[in-house]
Image (cartoon, rainbow, N blue to C red; front, top):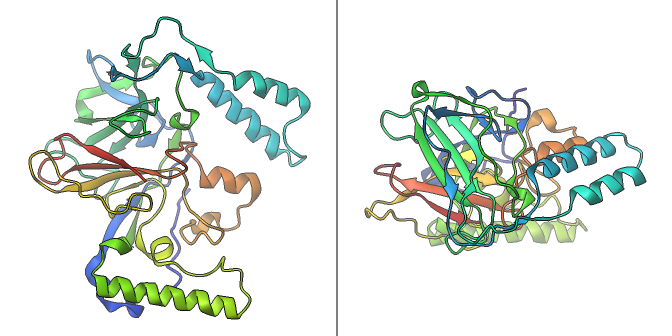
Length: 340
């Protein structure tokens, strides 16, 4: 199914012509539940893998001996989705009892804070499928894996690992090792196919020239004052960052959303500036208006809207985004992440 981002609510460059110099392009991935094969770009799908290469593990120190079983997380989601799809008030008493059992945490005795934990496959992106995807020279496949416990590199985030591949040198690996438990169910993706779409973005407001930023702020304030005078609750008031700057959800390239920390300087250890490789978003659109909601899902409501809005079921931070940056000189250099 195609997914088409609606035109922006108005031509923001007509309001502020200088924004043409701060325009960029990204690729929204539009993950949606499906059954991707190992030769397809996907989130939460099976990987290709080099013959004989050991599956990677996390040994960074952090508690890892208690959590939920992956199969229980998937089954819980299935039961809840089926219950709400009936439209009769949600789970039955019998289903609630099943869910209570699935929600239990389990303890893995003897697994110390540095014991090896198999990484979870998160996303597989072929350069042929994702326009503008940054890959090192000679490579055509990006694989993203992470440790499903949220305590890495000083952030409450999963430990992200990147693998750059040449697809022709890999074979399907349908059953990789899995961790006994995961620390956060939000780190377990549901299998999703992708429908990549190129979209236009504009730089995050805090990174714009001061004069332009102040004029945009004044414009937003005037919109709020007008809504207040009209007795409007403000739900339809436009926002530069929400409606015109950076696309939400899962995307490759483009500008970063700095809604939590404010802009951070990302510089590689080699001294080169870093660029956004991938944004992993907790939701595909935000707010009641949801101006980034695909046209094909404009009429969705209830359970259908929830499924479209959170297709991967991945939740990072407090429902934010995990940004992955790579070196602009050589993406194979060590990457950095920021939780927003």
